[in-house]
Image (cartoon, rainbow, N blue to C red):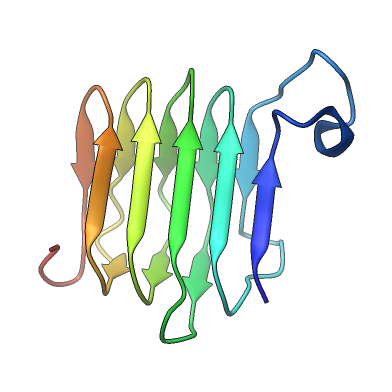
Amino acid sequence: MDASIDTRNPALSGNSGFDPDVEFGSGAPTPNGNVNIVAQNNVTLGDIATRANTGTLSVMANNGTINGSRILDIASTTNLAAAGNITLDNGANDFNGTVNINNGAAVTLADTNNIT
C-alpha cells in the first residue's frame, strides 16, 4: 500500500488556490509501502514507518521547509527537496537506505546508525 499527497492538485487540497502546510503521520495510518509527499509550502512529518523491504520516502516542499521531530523508520531510499531548511533531527530515526538531498538551504539529519 502506498500513500501519496500532492497539495498542488486542488481536488486533493480541497480549496483551489489555497495550499496549506502539510502534516503527515502521527495519527494517520502508516503505509507499508512508499510515501510520496509534494507540497507548495511547509511539510511536517510525524511518525512514519515504511516497513516493507522496498518502502521509500519522498518529500518535496517547493516553497517551504521539511521538519519532523518524530521517528522516521524508512526501509529503503529517502529523497528530500525543499526551498528552505530540512530538519529531521530525532536520534531514533532509522534511514536504512540511501538519503538523497536534492535541495535544501540547511540540512540537519539524525539517525540511529550511519546515513549513506
